[in-house]
Image (cartoon, rainbow, N blue to C red):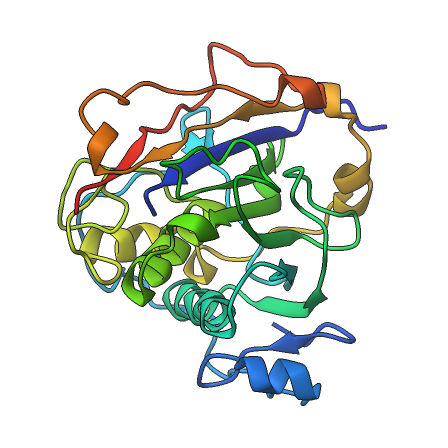
Length: 294
């Protein structure tokens, strides 16, 4: 077992080569019909963004804070992910694929869809994948109270500043429109890749829903700084690290999301996961609670 701890960080929102057996996104979002048919999807030739400057600039922050820097995914290793869409409608599942594609477009990261799953309600990522997107509800995920929209985040290795797993869960009970579904998934997957909340209402990572329909200029700069333009990681003992540390070696930070009725009196942080053997540190990165203002 490797000695370094894996740090697990979750935040909330009121919103490469193909992997064997997986589907990577081409020049358009992967569709539910393609997934259902098992059709192969060609690789996006210009996925890895190498521009020396970001496409835009603005307010952004990093969720996986690590000393003076931050952790990020390796853009030269496909991120194998599954979706638990048992409780999702086909349009909601499609919104997840669309959000992943937008993240790919902004970062140059390579997400490879490797199938559907029934896992993830306990907020753990199965060992055979790197990330999971879960459509839950208050029954399957009791942390989803009446006002919670979703959570997102992941784990990283502080020794290498490499993100090791990613997790998103959205509450289908509160996905009240296609627009809310789309922005919730984009925001939460933004957390998964490493964005934190900011105080600029022009950014999708702003901690209130104010009608943004997509990533703002600061979000785009942050995604660029988390993406392929920053280069690949050197070879490492990643596979051993992925399964080595026990749950007690993890640190989890969790924030929940509230709707407009609670926006003014639920501005506190909720720390959880103690029943999974996680603990908390005064050095944790704590995200702001995100609220939806209708």
